[in-house]
Length: 128
View 1: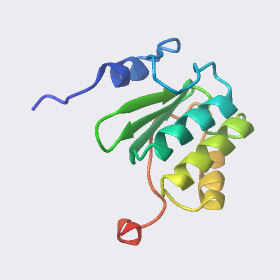
View 2 (view 1 turned 90 degrees about the vertical axis):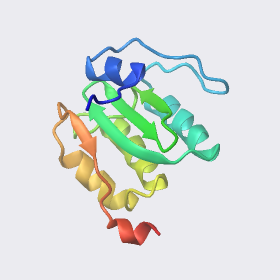
View 3 (view 1 turned 60 degrees about the vertical axis):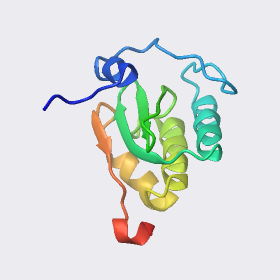
């Protein structure tokens, strides 16, 4: 069976850094961690639920439970990206992936060139 991949995810996987869709109420992304943090918080405040977080050295990619996608170039992992890593941990904590402290410790331990998913650090049964 063929995997269904949206256009944003395909571009993210290819490492494209300049693609940004127009989104009502969101500031244009520019790689600033504060802007990415605020934009993703607005999306979460609108009621969307994070299903998956994928990261690569160019930023973080969010897939929401309704299939919506958002690329946040200001959110990253690794000790080389302290502000970006802290902002990513804040969003993941708000998305119930774990406690902020545990997520921050885990994300800092990942290499800055890590490419892959970020999994919740808490058992799924605790999310209910």
